[in-house]
Image (cartoon, rainbow, N blue to C red):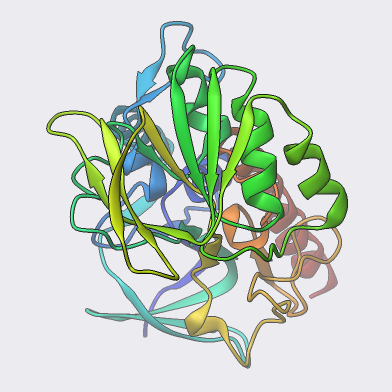
Length: 310
């Protein structure tokens, strides 16, 4: 008979691994399904300077490898397989990967969200070298420089305003003259002396050898292209939560994020959530880790209460 795990944690970013550390210290012997590319978005990040405990910063991959080792040290079983389907209709829950099927009394969903990219020829090559999708993560590195923000919604206006704390100039590039941003957010950006707007324009490539040196812009009305000098490119065109395999099972909001009920619980008893998959607002490693700890504590309490009832 297949082993039934106390909890299966799906995801190996800060949320999933912190949940694993707490769950394993509670002797729940969690199974962490880390995916074939473990570590979440921080594996694509260079230096992290805003994670507590590292006054001189730490590289994203190094932080995630340390967290994996810490989880394993306390008894977490980490496997590098991709989840293909989840059956949450009845307990024990079934989690099927590309290699096996696992049974679980509880599940912690921590699969994160991915930033939306423009899929430009040089975008990923220069990611972490001037191309970013997180102003709060990377804005500090652009002190006294000039940057471009792509987007027309609230997120773009928020990122533009935030970046003016560090940079000399922000140019917001948007493909039309109409903005999706709320009036108050747009007005705030428009009244900021460090923010300028370039409408009816789209970024069609990133320029630079080892670092971003500029972007290639295309006029969306005339089709004319021109090079625009800049030190950084920030994408603010949204995130997509990794919830496709959860559709029809766990309650999702209109943007497909997992709906949180009562701290870390979902609409399904025994299924918990942590990290960016349910957080369209903060999207920080430290906040994801904090909720990961909360999810593990909630799982521990849930299992103890269930055992007491039985």
